[in-house]
Image 1 (cartoon, rainbow, N blue to C red):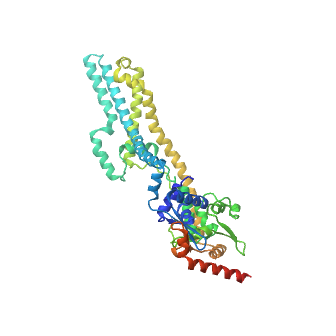
Image 2: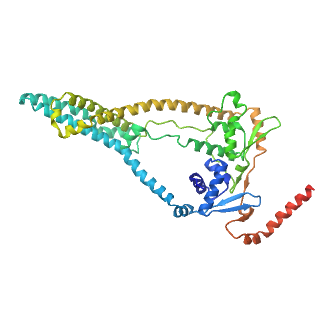
Image 3: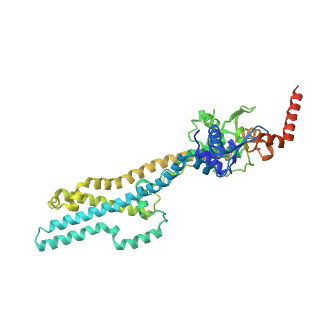
Length: 431
């Protein structure tokens, strides 16, 4: 049975003694998945089951269960090693774009300089010094980002802008490709917050309390049937209950069970998606990257023109021949360096408009709870009748896989006898 990393993380966060409901509430996992994950982890990591007199099960895990698993499974070790290796590789990939940009600029302008100097050598000395001087003083203007004076200018700009933790090469990658999806864990956050709402309300809620954490809940007429609650009921084994007035509330018995007294968790009133950011680089780093990209692109165009029309370029060989061999790679890189961020900018604007609209809709649903009407107040009041919390302490345990069964029966003889006597009396009262 495969081990679930989310279950393992939840067990650690909850102090290594958990119920299925604890893990489902902390991780947002489906109850069945959490149950299977705990069973697999207990089996593979030497966990123990503790059975309460109510029949509820608590799982107890050794604090070093990850070490136990590492010794047991080579693939876990390989997985950890690969994470470390990939971290280094990904960093090298990130900085490679900035390195290639600098190399590309250097190759382009050195080649341009060689072609111009070579072309001017065919003229007489007066023309060479006249025209060559003009050409020499023209091209350094394109290097203003790399000039000595720019260093002090850039440092001053950085002090005025928001500080960035990225170095130059990381900033180039961020300028090109951004910094990843800010809502990559949106579904995980969604189910964690929904589970927290249910736990905070002791396992009994109304649909209006869950709606601010969902996306599309349908049209107005569809909302009346509350079909959007079906995934929540399926995930956490919920049960709908109908009030005498015909209103529906939702009861989650398994989320009412815990090994510690539940403290109300602070959660946002609605699920908020984060807007996409163009780049985590500072504005100064973005300007520097864009400027160098423009310098690279303009240089590539000039070089292409010289390679196409320059008579000396074809006979020079050496560095010029080497650069001429992969000129289209340099031009393609220069074009992509400016085109990719431009396309990404407009795409981000489009995505952020949709995110803002979804946030607005969820916020509007949350406002309904802030000022509930009479009908909603009745639903919430009826839901509170099903609210409960059951804490399983050490005193409630009648069996645990930690110790021998005969020893446990001897130690808990009085408790077991009392439980049997209680059941016999209940059966007698029924008769």
